[in-house]
Length: 154
Image (cartoon, rainbow, N blue to C red; front, side, top):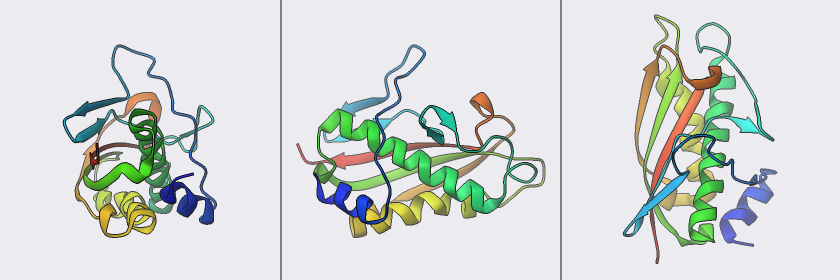
């Protein structure tokens, strides 16, 4: 088991089996020393942990949990691509889309659920650039969708 997964286990976080894309794309794409993920939502065992919009159906705290789960799902597909999460040299960037009502402007707070978790399990390697973007709708009514770019050791 990798050191990253051991740290996750200490935090009682389980790395799930990767979700298989249902459409015409791949979950990850490696380009040189970088792995890019497709967007990951907050599914646990195939079911969204929350549904709806921030500012109406989902609280900021629930949005943070959804963002954290999105990152966990990103790590799952990254592991499938590179075999060992200890090969992550650094997290370069995360991009988070937040399903938001008109007037909801707390997207950065929502994405902190993902950012804090990455730093917690990866330390300095987990610090990253980030964008938090409001959307009027997201697929399947997920409240948050996350993409990651990581640099890996080949």
